[in-house]
Amino acid sequence: MYIKVDGYEFPMIRIQNEWDITYQEFYIGNPKCKPKPCITISVYNNTDAILQNIIYFKNCNVTKKSFERGSGGMHILVKASLKWLFKEYPKLKKILFTDNSYYGEDISLPEKMVLTEGQTWYMKYFGAKPSGIKTKLILQQFLNIYNKDKSKFIKLQEPSWKNKNISETLKEYNGYLQNKRLMDSEWYISRETIETYDIDPFLINEQHGGENKLHTIINNIPRPKIRTIN
Image (cartoon, rainbow, N blue to C red; front, side):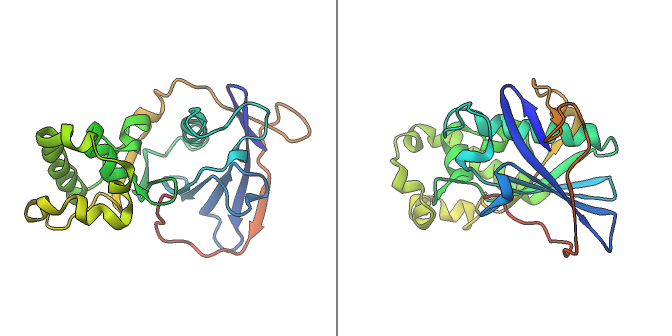
């Protein structure tokens, strides 16, 4: 099966646990999922969803339409996946995730974007909101620094944002931040937000266009803990 939207086609596989039918995983993008799918989503009891993983591969999309970095294709892939999911599961109210996002291999994206733009990647493009008091407090601390010194952070070169250099970049704020990080913070995207996405994805069958049944693999897989976003 494929999620089709705006000239893109993203392959999708549903993994169903043979010993627990209340749990399912969806692998979206990147044929055969090697080395891994572009997006992994878990759904429990048709009521709870976790965005387990997001990673860029050039062949997340299988049509000839460009899917280069910076083309906006990843934004469409994420929005299409979430909008389809929330149509498929009407009891879902939100999807949870842990922000462990990087640009390239080692640019720490949450800190970089909040301190230079005042919002994370997930806030900017998908309307994400902090989940829980801890994330809200850490975000507010970073926003206070952004409002005070954003002109300084905008001028920093990319090496300053590498994960191994973040501590040095934020050294003068250690007394205020107390070594807090936005990396690994917890977030959610609500149904109300996802329903406003300006795209209209639909499923097509591999051989017969218009069919909306998922290709399903029955597999004895363990129920995972919340994993991080790559």
